[in-house]
Amino acid sequence: MTYIVPNYFLEEQPNAVISSDSLFTLAYSSRRSQGSISIRNTTHVMILLTTGQKKLMTNNKEIVLNEGDILFLTQGNYFMSEVLSQKGLYEAMMVYFDDAFVMDFIQKYAVELGGCTSQNVVSFSSDRLLKSLIDSYSLYINQDLKRQNEIIKLKTEEIFLHLLSQNSNIFCGFLKSISLSSKERIKYILEANLDLLESVDDMCKITRLSKNELRQKMQQIFQMQPKAWLDSKRLEQASLLLKNSDETIASIATTCGYSTLSWFGVQFKRAYGVTPKSYREQNR
Image 1: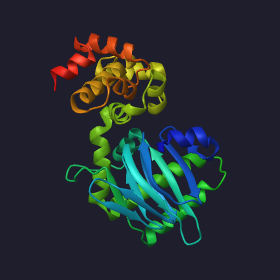
Image 2: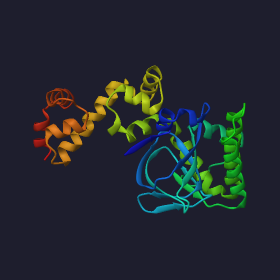
Image 3: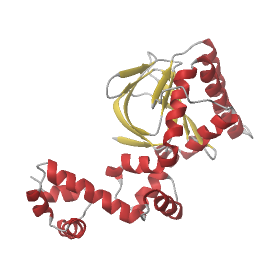
């Protein structure tokens, strides 16, 4: 199963989420080990592991986090697992934040990013100071305070500043990755989750934008309306499958989100000037 986050938590457990304009925070717990979960982040995330163990599988290595460790992931698609502690429990605090939060932090504290290497995934091992910061964070998450949002935001900045002080090059690399891709964030979200998009409503849901906001963004980035962009991407995917796979044309039509083979044929010919069958024959 694939989880789109923080969307999943905002829809399924809205009362558990502490949210502000650029930050979504929640305490997560489970009594069931989970292996190879597919996670799609539509924002960036800081995972504060408090009980159990987490494993993240990347293209070239496996990252293992133990209690007290912190994992940072930029927006993107990941595979990970959750391992229960000896007490049969997995617990973590999930802190989702957008580009605006990071850019404000960089500006507020005059962070210099010039000399570091961009990194999409970084982790930090527990130490005495980090443990105390995480314990404090947990304490405020579990309190019903009048200005809880503002306190949580400051607590997040506090952890960022600690990591910036103790592990400057690595944490700057994470911030730099976000800074470099910030202007094209919507583009990355949509293209990384193309297989889940069947309508403009799906595009709005995954980007958490209204239809008017989405239209404005799509016009700025692609000079296209959302429906036209989605159709072009579907047909682009279909052309690649026709050239490089042995799937039937009917199967390709379904894979690319077309409800009928005839409508797929009409749309494909309109875009490429030939039928899907002729296109496959010409490109084999």
